[in-house]
Image: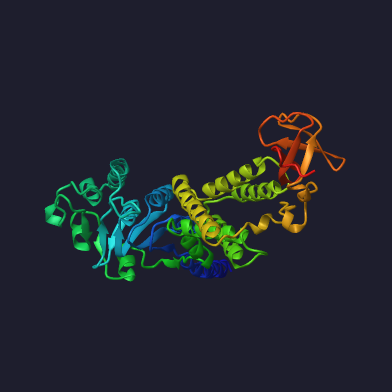
Length: 442
């Protein structure tokens, strides 16, 4: 009896263990695969921030950043580098094509770098929008950041410096003085800037001992892709210029048409893109709306203060929405220049008037052509003779046909009871001169 009980208990234990096996085997590790493509800019930061957050929430074992970028903007690269440094998850860079400029900087902020046979890394000098190398101040700071990034993961810093500084002499890697360093996959492996060269993503998983992991690929949503396009520092001034020019043209047009619609759409896209990218908050929208309301109030309030405050609020909201204040100030200056030039062209060459002000400004004129006169015009008096009732010094009173009329002399003094001739009639202004002997016809 006791033996039977032991046998049954043992069978139940084995069965329970067997049922736990699928549960244990189902608990596989997760690895996130995140693409880092195209330019490094503010929109990419928002996408990577979401991807890293998702990986942290899922308890992922590693994040593989698949890098293929020609570089981008220094400020964005610095923000993304800080983002990479802030996570404790294992970070792997897989350069399957190129990691140049800002891309090289990001790769150096991962824990491990792997490259495809055709991969390259380097050429990381700071280039201005004009295409020239940036000033010494900006370059010096960037060189220090590249050096620190290499030292952070135990790499020889001289190669990172050579990527950003053409005064470093490395002729053995095609980078003598005057040339920036760009390493091939074999060269990166040789100098310790790559852990291994892998021909495929599957091989990368094997080399990194992650071949059994569940791969979760993150992709940009349509909104994130749109935000990346809109927040590009090249697109921002174009959007703002279209907005300013469209609204200026609309001010000179009756009703509300295509130009105004394009201007409003450009503004909406600007704020939408920066909101999605996480660069702007709702406070910037509130400041912008307040600015618009103040400008509208300017049509009904005297003094111009409301309009000035409204314009300032709109400019401040746009600058704050961009994240990089210096960059946004340049974009706003470009947009304002376009608007001013557009206004001058419309007024000077097309002779257009501000139609929007017609309803709030009195434009009617009481001209003679329209039948308006301020006083009765006594043109019938021209050439007639009169007698002064008072001295004219030069103004006084004359009498003509028993009618008293105010008059002025032509500049000379004329005494009382003198004959004068009316030589000019300008509305109510009667100009006379003293008559000469023999001229009076009375």
